[in-house]
Image (cartoon, rainbow, N blue to C red; front, side, top):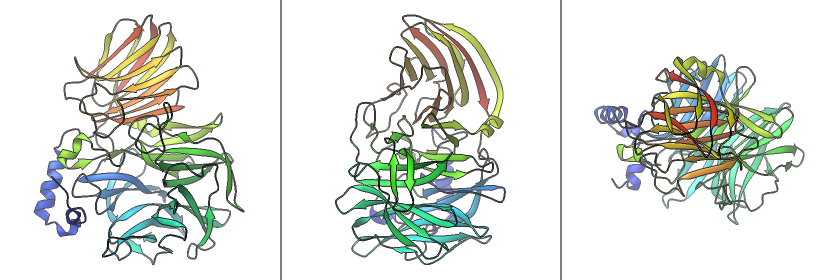
Length: 488
């Protein structure tokens, strides 16, 4: 189906109840629906937004076009959770219902101010000539719904284009700050900074000054936090050229760490590092958890890619939550411990691997692999495998090269460069924690030192878990957990 502009900007309120119920039923029965990941009730999901913990409850929104697998009129769908394992839908959504967000509620964040959850996001407005005007909006999440105030920033600052969006806010030393992704008039990407003493009146502080003055044409979804006295900035640069195994996706998502001088917003930092080495990871957002830990959730997808689920009018999901720490100068990402509450029955095997052998079967599970020894050239682990399908994890011991290969995974997304993603591990492979769902895989390597996140679209009968070793052997201990289905 060819989506016209009018179709893309149709509001869900203009759809009658019968039509929407049919759309929802079709979505629920569509192929490759996930068993334990957050996914759209209908239509398209993208960025996680408004992620915050307050009064014993996490609030998490996802940007949402309800009517199909395209980017159109965006809402924020609202979920609440006590543990980030099980979620319930909340009717208090963000709707594009004012002049300032007339063409969509774009991405943003949340912060608790005076014991009230505030939502801060970009309103997308289009003029009659289809010129975009971005508005930065603050809304209060009340018991009765979402109450919006006047925009605190109207349009882009001088020197920047209409691509001026995705505010992330935080409080530090009795002052509020916001970072916004921006594009300069010379079509290079950057982050701009605002500050406020009262969360009402905001002052433009200029750019966050980094070493990257010409690093892509737009920086989306910035995030800032401090870990163990170190400043961390996440952002998603668009238009960065591939460099060896780096920057292979259409758009990138990564971080810089160092020290920010908050007098002039100059940052001394290490090199930009990709957060995830897989195919499908973008627009991450973090918050402080109930125990003070820093938690990240990302969009398991990318813009401008066509996925096999598109034909069934739904697309994308969110990653599992990850706890972030800094160790040996880099970010570590570990699945939150509470995910263990999903575990049901388990199987365990200790095996000597040489020739290919089947170990377990399953479509939705958690798999732990401990590598006791490797004498061969390479270790191969095939997931969601059949006679002619498999998603392969390959470790080449001599070079410490770890590869996710979805060449034979089943149907593939369109518009993607290649079918493998590789990174060089900082240390030899010792452990893997793998989460497989109906149409996704998340691989945590060496206790979260590296992560590979990807969508996969195998056939129903592709269920084998098999291992082999090239030109030698490997000693493995493996444990597989079946997982409780559903997010509620």
